[in-house]
Length: 400
Image (cartoon, rainbow, N blue to C red; front, side, top):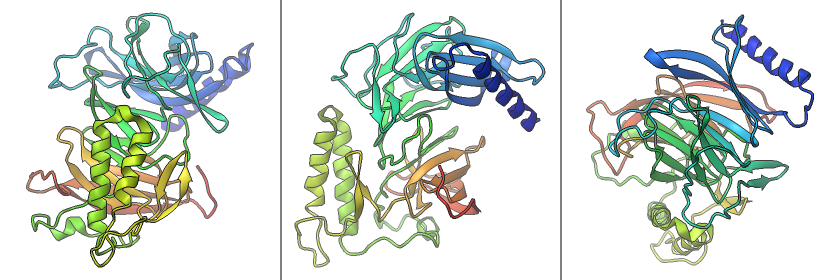
């Protein structure tokens, strides 16, 4: 059934591309399958297509009865995500209950219909009708619009200063990933809830990236969070995979406290922009103590393999994955899944199996994430455990 569905989707995309008179205008930018939540808890398999001129939604539940649900051509779209039916929020009732189901469209073109502006990064957006951020030869979007399949119009929009790499949706949050941070919006109100600082994205691919979102947990790539030695955390939660080198000694814990402090401080003053964050990071990294406990100028204890898109890359802990609880914000686990930077993360439908891949694409790892047995939650350290289940080897050459 799955192969038949994929064949039907591929045939549909090919037929659209081959029969369109203006292939340049309607070139497919992105395609993906998703589940459309209809009335009465009915789910329909749909194919989402993003074009240079707009987007389309096709019902492909029945391979022999493919039907078009929506088609709109009013601006370039880079990628699309369907929003899930939200769970009751502390912020209030579902603000868009009468407009659902909703699509999240990442793009940069003009749009018609009702739209509410929102700059997730604070003041300073250039104020045009939509711009793109250049990344090499690819233009990455800076605007996320929300489209009602019920009302056939736009109901909300978010404007960002820099490129949006991917969007992931769950019944609790809508996560928008940028180069070094993830913005988590309440799924019921689309108001900003919190922001997570991440490792820089090295190989940006529109619509994809190191962001995994499950029913309850969110996974992302970042620097390890220091865990205080309080004696309350069981050793099994701190055991590292054989592929992970042990953390450094002496002043490394202090160094990480300094780095995390600068990140948290920078997160509270995001209006300073990247320049402010870099200055804070440099200030703390220059105060890392050496093995004798003395303050040493420079980046002692900090290893970097270069600078990408203006962001320093920490090679010592590249490939580290952090899993947090969406609601409590508490850390569930953190571990080093690869020895090179993460390029992709994905939870299975149960939200307990996490698939990881690095920028080289040679190995795919599968981990089982488990919450703490006693159900306790600590703000300082891990609240769960992980097991490395599989290592799938694709080959020795690099791949995306």
